[in-house]
Image: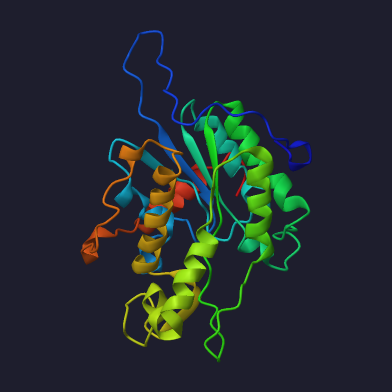
Length: 283
């Protein structure tokens, strides 16, 4: 749906059953689709240890519920739609499924082809996701993106994308859509941890520490498994605590440790194929 025609349509109560077919087969369990950018995306093995929170959301969701991560690194709400990725989701989502929508980081960037305005076209694009899901009797949920490790030299943590979570909260209220405020929650964590304490949650690699980055790599915008797991845990907790999904869908919320091999990355060929296939556009 073009952003210019987006609207807010009424929603059925979340948690409704999935329709069965004419053969009276048991209903398929609902799925959780994810739309977002690199904060949410499932990374390929050549990018490890970069990890999106959507890559590990299944740690905290009962195995009967499939998580379909359609997030794309580098996407804004605009480009995700323009390149046919929203169309692919809407072609595959079914009644009773959920669509978690997490944008704002790249929408804030200055490039004209990427950027949206927080109180301009950003809300219009969000409403296209919302209306598309509701028209298919699925349940949209808005999730603000996590904060970056934006500590300054004095140890303060300035806000990096203030207007976008605010605009998302406004859209959620206007459209009666559940809103998970991951931005404020993560910012509170990072501020409490301080510049040194938050380092393990973001990419901070010294030379020869990881084979993917032999020269070292420091990236305050992309998370490690620790950061992604923290964010995914909060998203799953919020979905259940706010009664967006049935409470029993959330599992292992109190689990304190995951072994290093629990987090996996897609091989590059599979990642490329999924990126290519999960679009009804050209890119």
